[in-house]
Image (cartoon, rainbow, N blue to C red; front, side, top):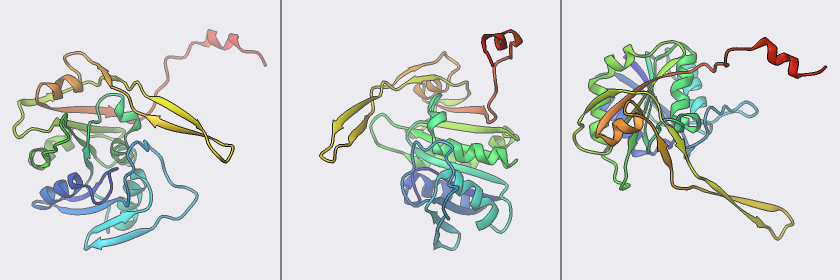
Length: 245
């Protein structure tokens, strides 16, 4: 197959390079990834300035934009044909539950699903800051056909796994809810402006036994099918009477 590999950690990320190398054993792999770390940019897209792509290998490019930019231009402008799949990762760190909203890794796969291209987001969870990339890269390579069978237009697949050498199993999962307990530190600057500094907190995760979080905690690979399209709650015509014109 023709596969586009991207991420949000940047072209130099070890996880991306290990994944691309594993997939290259059986497929024609192109890499289009951000030129710098773009974690947490969600589904941002660059619309008001041109993007610059620098070639660093026969089928490898860095992009000054965001992961979604890489997904769009990589598949429509850089590659000579529309890819059979877009695989985003391997992300350094979890993309569990609520993380998916913020994740540039997930956004690149979501964008693929909007375009009718199978999209897979892949993330590695470590509690010790030691990342064993090879087991997860091998899992994606060996199970690529099965993962692609779970994709559909407006549905992408989100894969998370613990950073261990051997997995306890594979689970199809729902998503957990993450409370980040973040805070903002404010300072008055010498120029008369106020400056804010983001401070990450201790994440609290809520999820039942079928959640992605519990699967990873149990040493398993978590596979979730994620709907890409936003949806509204069932409309209640009576609520319109709350408003005045």
